[in-house]
Image 1 (spheres, rainbow, N blue to C red):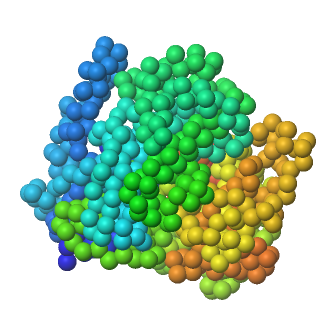
Image 2: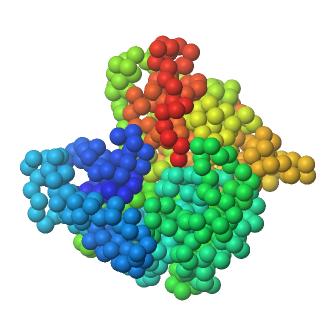
Image 3: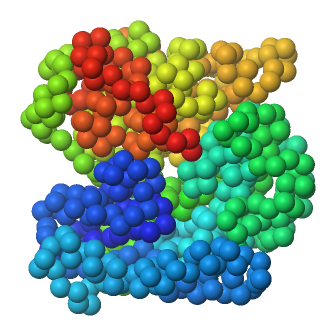
Length: 611
């Protein structure tokens, strides 16, 4: 038996995974254990979990691999400061002590941390360092259902690369081209995230969600800041940005260019200007990615595309690439951000460095991304009793039937089943569910359960066999990473008067037969649900369809604003009691809010920061 432990850490979304004989056995993000969103620290708990799940001590693991190369990153930092000197000295002075003390000597830091897991662990030659973007590319190609694919990765920055093109065939993967820092599509998008008042490295999906409410009237202005070539490569004019050397993303020149300072989320509401800016940067991002996709399809003549890196979480852009029919097939790594780097580093070591054969799984090798913690029925009941929860245990068929009934009556339901998802999306294991037919559900879930902005869209989970009946798409989309339009047969067109309303006022207009998951532009971020991958969730949607004629549920992550997705039954109960969820279903147990002791009620409205 051969085992590899993959680790990503020290930037954001720290995570660990374990491979046994090349098979993905377990993977999880550290944030789920520490309850600190996007936790960048050493993934102590995640490593403990994957080792325990694989029934291994650290001293029994054959190889350990880290997802990037610290010395190359340090070189980029130094060269950047030299190139931009004397600008950025404040940032340089802040960064250097931490690098010299910890990050530069990460092998020693890792060794000291690893020793805490197992006193028998001895540092020998079994620690390896992968390249950041190779880790991303490997995470996308090796679990994909393709023998051969071109792999596009894009994010903020790794060591030097910000965008790469790689070609994978069988167990080989080679990076062919790179765009280097400071020219970064991820950092460009993050700069506009910062400018519109959201938090960098966590609020980018809000910018994407805001875009349909605006008009892309600033496209030409944005293109004055970025030189986009016909093949999709680009260069960013650094005099408007501050991310290379400063402590902010944009500078005064940027503010003067667009005529406003960055939005202060504490005292400044989102205006039409911010919606239009969001719409414009989204369109520019889509244009770059479509041009890149076209040029690499023409150059390599390979019909399959794999995507990874933080930019691959832009499911609207992914949907546009699909719509353009540039590639025959597209597969996106569900943990596309840095968390997935732990998995990619391990897979790169197994296949590329060790030349192990690869068997392609036509369903993909991510197992629905259900790779995290799980709890037996006995463990669930013991934990619920220990925290004083009032619950009822039901037989499987009765549980599914009862839950579908609650949902059909517009109740908000917490759903905690099986293994936790790896990656940023809840996929029917740690989810909050609702009735998509309700025109009040989107607003109610946002304001009463998630405690977040009312404009934020929700995703539909739909039975795979009913997918094209309800949406203009007919390929598997199990990871909620593709946006598509609602089937015209299910649409309710807005009147001319309604179309003229201020962006967010359109929220209250019923735009389809499933308004809770229909965005203002008639699009939806879709998850197709397959019985083979998640039987319990499939059966619930099937029962809801029998009851209502609708094979779709609202699916949003089981957490409140600013909190990581719940990990344990205790996390789920706390979230249940701190929100206006009506029911909580954990394993075979049903918890009714009205039957809980009021002393467990929590106030979550101010506990977590805004993204």
